[in-house]
Length: 192
Image (cartoon, rainbow, N blue to C red; front, side, top):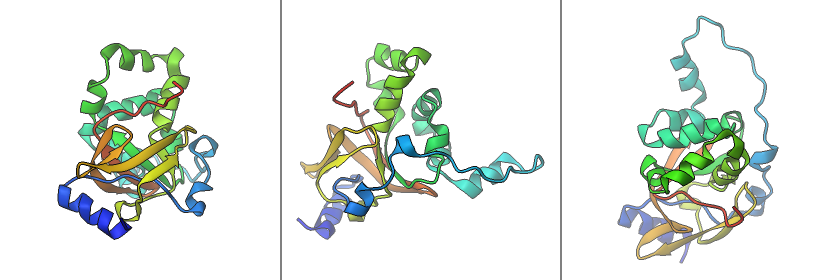
């Protein structure tokens, strides 16, 4: 199945698409762990925060502006990954909705958000991130390494695009430093 056919299948089924097998250039992009926020000029004190967000429009800004991602944003803050995901990138993020986080056992989410489990939370969140900005039209089924280090698998199953066991429900939410594809389940790395 070629990329165009895959895209048409995704559009026809009303399902969003995520990224998988990327070109060597994307696979050799720096990992999330190696990214640092670039130091820039400070905004004048009088500048409103809203203008600042509109200017940057990073993955964190986009997620923060959407109520469906409030749990994800809370987790990103607890993991200390705000600066990284606001950095240059580019990144492809498979963003679980609040409903996806609510489907986890309550004890699991509560445990991950504890300060003493910050490293585990970072692993979980980095498992949702791939280096490079991959739009739905550029996706091919297969396996791709996440910035956490373990691969995810993207496939079409029953007319739906799947990332591991999660269904992609919306694609191509653009940010200044990458793209977000929305998924309906939280992905847990195999080595957690």
